Image: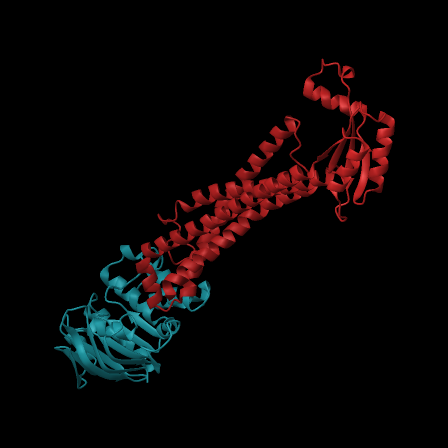
Amino acid sequence: MIAELLGVGHQYQDGPEVFKGVSFNIEKGSFRFLTGLSGSGKSSLLKVLYLGLKPRWGSVKLFGEDTFKMKPTLVPLLRQKIGVVFQEFNLLDHLTVIDNVSLPLRVRGVDEKRSHKHAGELLNWVGLGDCLKAYPPSLSGGQKQRAAIARAIITRPQLLLADEPTGNVDDEMATKLLCLFEELNKTGTAVLIATHNQRILKKFPYLQLTLKDGTLLQQQLEKKAS
Amino acid sequence: MKKDQDLPLKNDIAARFVPKIVILMVYLGTLCFTFTFFLIHSTRIWEEKLTTDLSIEVPLFSEVPSPNLQTQVFDLLKRTPGVANIDIVSQTEMKTLFHSLLGEDTNIEAFPLPTIIDVGLNRNESFDIKGLEFHLKNISATIQIVDHRSWHGQVSNLLFTGISLALLLTFLILFSTLVTTFFATRTSLLIHREVIEVLSLIGATPIYIAKQFQRNAFKQGIIASSIGSLLGLCTFLGITFLFENAGLPFIVSETFIFEAALIFIIAPFITSFFMMISARAAVMKALCS
């Protein structure tokens, strides 16, 4: 089991509960969509999964480790098993695109030559082959999105979390990126994508976890011809 | 941007003042440390040269004829336990001494110069000054005994205090350099909080992040402290030149030259090493707490 959430709830300071009693599992090799209206808590739930947010209630187990009880030194090691596509991209503006994408490999101790080779191949695949030496501020929203995705998947993580990964790209690129996620999923990576893109949801009929009024609903869409 | 540096620390506003402080601190530190060694060597040499612990003044006019008096004092000293050496200060030395005190034009021959006997003591044997004084007064009440050991001790204490203060000052300088590095790193951590957060989210360990700060602190330290050390060396050479020109020996021994050179060479490495440790401590404390 990759992740086990049981009765998870969160509230920012004295504000309303973002979500409550959320329970679900992420199995190895699963593919899930996390849907819900804007502000329904999708991003917060993803944050809980990548250890960026400690929920107020419930229990979260990641890769068998209870996140409430584990030693702080374990956090980076667990994060190394997770790839995250952030909604705000979180690219480092002072690094080139290729350096940004190869960063997770360098953090894991891969040498520069090898990490750049991998990053270059991946960037070519996502259509950023001519932007290797560009800096993020000079990229468009869609290009940043693709660079962020490349960075998240370069390590072939055991769990991929993506927050609105198709929000800034056209349909054609969105489909291409989803196909990339599917390919990654076939190699064993569990994928959880937060999105409200209905076209994507119809085209890729995987289990949907829907956050509504702070609670989680599950539904399976039937596959439609693409 | 070098690939071993994921944080933009090179153009860090917070750390811009650090090299200037390090230059000043290393400059002062190396000079202070060199001065300490100078004091240590000077003290050692001075102590080695000191052979006189007591002076016995035998007056020219006394109830006992002078040659007999000298012989009696000599015999007494030879019998006294703890006495290592006995030397009569020559008349030429006496004249030189008096000329320096009273002026070159003074006719020394007109003065009734006493005989001065320098006595060196064996430090490993016990010596009874009261007993010697008693026996000397028995020979002649006009014989005076001067104990130099009290002011030797005072001078030694003064030099020891000087050495201790110089060492304390050196360590304070080193400590303030480390504190400066520590707080500059803390400020830098705040400035680059967002980048550090991203690095943490993609799996960077605190050690990985600390290494970035360490490398930067080491680079800054080695450059700045080399400049500080070089400036210190120039000042040291300048002081040496001025002292030697004034006829005062500054290079007190060969060992001192060797030690001074060693200080100027190793100071940049020691400083940058400790700066590196300080930067690492600041990062680890912030990220692991």
